[in-house]
Length: 137
Image (cartoon, rainbow, N blue to C red; front, side, top):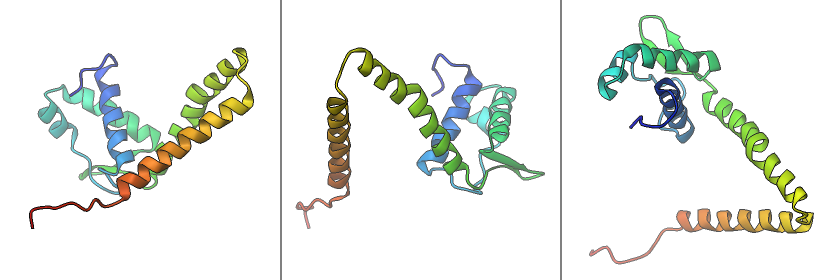
C-alpha cells in the first residue's frame, strides 16, 4: 500500500488525510493506534508515530490521554481549505501564467474552464441519477 517515492511517514499522513477528506474518518472518530497501524501495515511504530505527530501539529488529529488519536473537529474543512489554496498556487496560477506566455486569449481560457465545469457537473448529475434496469425481479 505504501510504496511511493515519498518517505513512509509522509505517505501515511497523506493516507489519513485522504480518509478524512473522503469521509471515511469523521470528526471525533478514533484513528487506529500507532501500534495497530504498524502491525497492520508491517512498518516501524516510530514511523507511524511520526506521521501522526505531524497530523496533530497540523490540527487534523488530536490525542486523548489514555484513549488514543482522534480526528479533530473541523479537520475536513481545514484540509479542504489548505487543499484549495495549494491547488490555486501550485496548479491554477502556473497554468494561467503559461497560457498568458503562450498568448492564449483570456476568452479561450475562460471558455475552456466553463466547458470543463459543465462537463463535470453533467457527470455528477449522471452519477446521481438512478438507473432503471431489470434486476431479475
